[in-house]
Length: 318
Length: 318
Ligand code: HEC
Ligand code: HEC
Ligand code: HEC
Ligand code: HEC
Ligand SMILES: [Ca+2]
Ligand SMILES: [Ca+2]
Image (cartoon, rainbow over all chains, first blue to last red):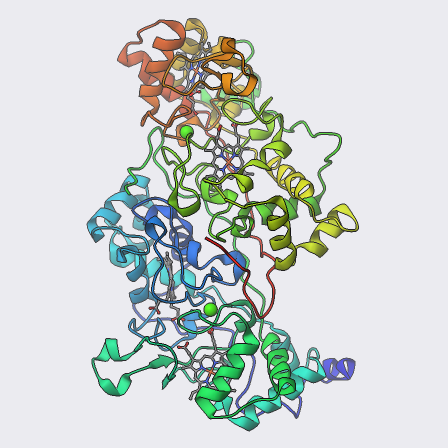
């Protein structure tokens, strides 16, 4: 069958309406066009622990490029080994989400990137000026100027460069994507899972090629009130952005509190809490087999060289 | 002059005898031949925080490939934010040293690589078996088997793969190397510094193309007894391996205790403690200018993808 499909190169009839391959390109905000130099600068900043007060923590500490944009921790380890309040979602494909953070409190990547440096349990910089001064001392000035023009080094532009880099962190060509394009096959179990999630209504929220409709939905689980703290509206109590299923097999543990160790348990809980359904073990196994077909190809990244002053160290602080 | 030299492509007459370009290849132990697959595996292991009990610390945390194989900390940050007792030397060109660690307590890279995982203030694994089990669960088994044959995943082979990778972390083509090969020029100040270090005797210890004679020498500075603790001989009190000058401008802060912030101060102290000489400010500036010409080209590394289990997280512990 797989050979036949590969030759036909057309969408198999059993793929439910709405599902599709990962889009090849992401939305880019008008005020932050992507250029190769900006992406390169953003890559340096993403990987550079000089963004943190201690010199020990980078974006990559919690969103490791080698492990699908996550740290696989229940709650991430930040400044002085403090644990944050939520599980770190992946930076991969984040460019596709309507908002950033579990509670959607950042409209887009550029806003999001300003959070961690100033967060006392993450990178713990005291002020934006302190961080900018450190980047200046490290030698980032000329690189920012090249990308953003004279006196280009600023907190805003740091966030822009990081956002531009993150828009390259896409994971195309998952087995499901190849299947839907008629280029490869997936297992019989995965096909049953694909039908099941459509039949029972998972795809009312986890819809489309991203397997999220990018809306906020109530998830009555745990003590975190989610979006209520952002909007101040009690109606938003326990609302969270619908998480994408893209690479979900590689981003354990699960849910905003990282409380669930396995994907099968997360599926069971979703069925119960969101749909009032108790799934059979066979159904859970099929759905998990399908979710595993959504693991794509991670971006290929050449390790950057960070600017550093010659002959003296940066002034890390604890 | 620089054009003439570049055309002549011969060794300039002013380069002191013994000095030379970084060797193009490193010694490789007979029992650990380098293969592309082994180097690739070693690269994954070097960058993977799964080597640590917490899942938070990799070799790269302290020997960052983006910052010249160091973390620029006085003393590195390890498990639970503990600080170790010494400054982290660079992993770049370490393949050239006669022994590893400031006190030379590890004969070669393979021995060295077994230290950090078991060090309670670094990666803090309780036992070798615990670490091997975690690597197994992560999915490293098949990769080790491909490189080392059946049941290839072991603590020993982990160290071998890391050692093989580290032998690729060479930094050729420093401005000095291009100068000595007649391919480029260095500044007049650097040339004066080059002559000075030879005249006053720095190069009795910092000799040859590596700018270390790879011996242990007494350095009566600080409270660390150095090699005495390794050999148990009082004669070795305050003996340390002569540090290479390769990339030394990028590896601040200085000395085994990281107590010195600037390269010029380190030069002043060396002259005083090792040679009983007080250098003029001009001499110090010239020597620093010369040392800066020993900053080479860092290795180009593609970020690896770590093996990870699908559908569940590894069991990190604190
Ligand atoms: C110490 C850990 C840590 C560090 C450092 C860190 N993050 Fe995060 N990141 C998190 C956590 C935890 C969340 C979720 C927080 C929340 O939703 O309240 C998050 C959320 C995100 C999101 C939102 C993804 C989504 O699906 O909503 C993006 C994008 C992101 N981080 C990128 C970055 C970038 C870029 C940096 C560096 C500037 C960074 N992170 C630094 C832990 C970290
Ligand atoms: C009413 C909307 C809705 C429905 C229906 C729904 N989900 Fe979800 N799903 C969400 C939201 C919201 C989240 C984010 C939960 C959180 O904040 O932890 C989520 C998260 C998940 C996660 C965890 C993702 C992660 O990275 O932690 C999985 C897995 C998942 N859903 C699978 C399913 C499956 C399978 C079904 C059907 C059985 C389903 N969902 C039905 C809204 C929904
Ligand atoms: C928490 C910090 C930390 C971690 C993690 C760490 N190192 Fe180190 N490394 C150091 C320090 C500090 C020293 C010097 C210790 C000494 O001399 O007593 C050192 C020494 C070395 C040396 C000797 C270099 C020389 O010039 O003698 C090499 C090579 C090295 N480390 C490689 C590694 C590898 C490979 C790993 C991972 C398996 C690793 N390190 C993990 C901090 C660290
Ligand atoms: C008698 C041997 C000897 C002589 C002579 C000597 N050094 Fe050193 N040098 C060492 C040793 C040993 C170390 C390692 C010191 C330590 O353990 O911190 C070192 C370290 C250094 C360092 C710091 C490297 C680092 O990464 O922290 C610099 C810079 C340096 N030497 C420069 C010089 C200069 C310049 C001179 C001449 C003025 C000189 N040395 C003369 C033995 C010597
Ligand atoms: Ca997760
Ligand atoms: Ca140093």
